[in-house]
Amino acid sequence: MKKTFHLTHPKIKVPRLVESIKHEVKKYIKRERGKDLPPDADFWDFDCRFGIDQEHSEAIHVSAITTSIDQAEEQKLESFYLEIIAKPASRTKKPLEEKTTAKGK
Figure 1 (cartoon, rainbow, N blue to C red):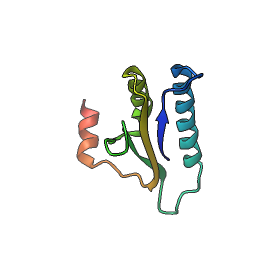
Figure 2 (figure 1 turned 30 degrees about the horizontal axis):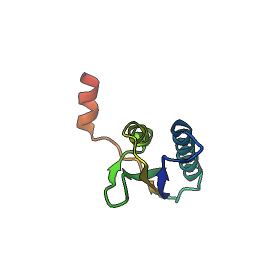
Figure 3 (figure 1 turned 90 degrees about the horizontal axis):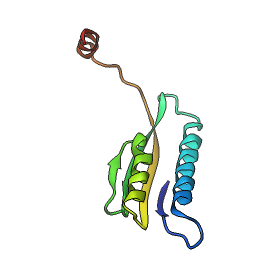
């Protein structure tokens, strides 16, 4: 999904627009996660970018999408760009040193 969302509308208020945008994003992520994985992958990972426009977008984590949308609402932006690209990924095991230090804490 590569899309510019507008936060202005002559009849719809901004909070309702924000709710519909968040719903559309969640629906897209759920649909992508439901697709069949390649045999060598464990889960679907997402490359996300957020910004005022495509040229000024920065990479964010998938869990930061709703916070970024809320910040755009607080800053009263007229529109923002959101890009979410699904990619298959495999889980990696933590090194043994990290496991022992985590238990010691």
